[in-house]
Image (spheres, rainbow, N blue to C red):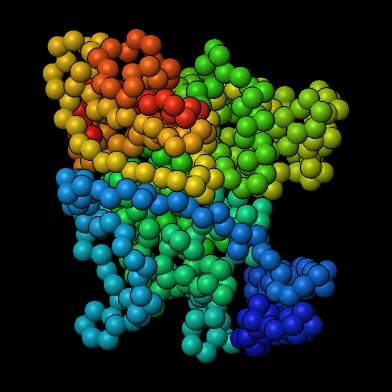
Length: 568
């Protein structure tokens, strides 16, 4: 019965007319209702009722649409520019050298894989298995129960003759809002990134998965279950988009704790755990020493990372809010947060975890109040205990201003671990705001690749040996310069030999910055005097400089690294 309902549902988007689409949607609802009555499983009834609710909303949208097919937000995609500059042979070698990482090869992306790459093979090895298992930390090894494929944990539905219907729905579909959480794996930055990305998609701005994960079901606009257990990801690191191949085996646990990201509403949802595995393969394994969500979203999506230091004395909070609020509403920026070091007492009193990344799911403003819906990605994570805490009954507390009452939605936050905070509280208690911008906002892009082995600094204040570039634009306007350091195997090794504190690990890897000069006619500079942009020295692999260029000016862009143990 459910198979018939799915067949009717698949015809909705293929319908030639509005009336035909509405007819197919109603038929699918009727068949799902019959499927609900035919099953005795409460969990199955809940799942199928969710499908009915989803299709009823779809039918209402069809009834109210003025034309067919309607224009969907997922189809409205800004064109992402590509670099029009031809790179040199030396740059090609740099990109090829960047393919080798942690004993794996991640080649530059050249084309989308063919569907045949994911078909089940016949012979001795019908399913794909990675040549090397990813590393686990000591804490993970203690509860590790082996590597298991998803199909081993899913029971076949009585109406599912070929074993694919329920499996595909559970592993790749989502009726309710996705609620991703981490557990024992220390990758809060990765999970916060996934939360920010899924929140954007659930607001109707379209998923980024279609250009990220293969195989992909384009008619249903979601990832597809690979028949041979092989998945290919298009991730952005070491100078270009790269091909990351994994199998579908995930680390199983001997306890109730999870070794990978899960959806709290549908623990069997597969694609987030696969995406997490692909990223962790790039970063060295599940014994991940930590990162920041700005870097992680850059790798996962290719969206331009920008780090805002919230503890800066000259931070213009009004300007910052106006800059990000509308862009967030348009779906052109994904936002995450990071705390600095906090004492155990501060953590208890504030309800915030130190050196931890959070996702921004929503933003509201009313009058003078500016609010952000923050999510702690920890499965059993603490929540903010400040003045704008949402009480258990969902009603605003007596200390809240009328503006805050009006700004908040009527219902309580959508899941555990989420809470509303004012912009002022965010600025006071968080260290960094990570913004990842839609690259489609720009029309032009130019990539340059270089390597730099830092010499012994005899004169620390001198820039004589630093890489420098001349920048000139044929038009006035905004130019963003992004410096991105390659990942290296030695980076993971250095991090593993340091203490557990993320700041200690990051500091051991060195700092990078960008300086920009306007009165040099594009010539080399030797000192930092007269720089019009002095970027903060950051321990992140990326740093961004935003510049308003003038037509008649040639600028000098200079890379600064006071101390770095790795080759750039």
